[in-house]
Image 1: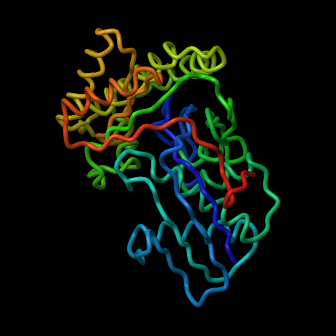
Image 2: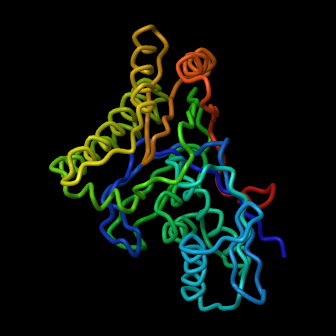
Image 3: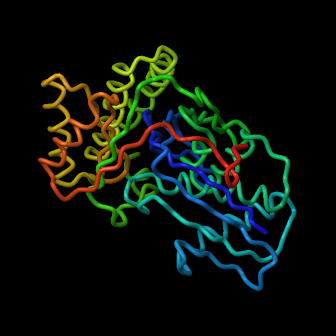
Length: 323
């Protein structure tokens, strides 16, 4: 049976970086994201198979990556009192573990495929909770446009919610893929290390104000405020990493070069802002009218990099039908 679900990845504009419950993936802070049209995952959960397997991009996956996916499905089976063998068959149109939020689309799509395979009546809020059990950022990929993940205090209150699934804001995200290899320090490791930073607690307190301000920027279609907040929030997150007991950074020399480029372009009158997740890749936020010129400048600086421009992506879809 074809239970294929498509989920688009999202980029956090106000980021979460730290868990208060690792098993339930409850965050220490709320977050706001933009769902992207250019990156997505298609997943089909096939039931009643002879064994349990995970296929990614046509190849059988083994080891820790497979164990994480299979144990996640088994966890959902226990939650809904169902059982049986299965194959997870995914096509991932996102570089894996390179700071482009591949897990957000991967587990959102898997959660949605699970719900369809077992014919469960689940709301989008409920689906976001299920997705969160696989990957925190997947909570937001259930929704299109702008979404918020409420940190909550327990599993029932930590969920995603749409802020605006059909935004009018002129907003483009230019993803500059500097390195698509797997990260040396995973997001989970990085979050634990970051807790030792003297900047960590102040950053959590700052999050509450930034969430309010970002929601206001979205509601007012205020691109400038959105860009300034996103850049500030990303810079603060990476400053936390640099100041922890065992300092680390996801930045590479090209990452820093792009930060300087964005700052220089802004001085020249091309309004743009950067945001960077747990990886070296830089995302540049801008308006459509400036996109081509910014991409040209990036190519002049780094001729071999891959650049992908994204607009707003949709929420969870089954085949060609959005739920």
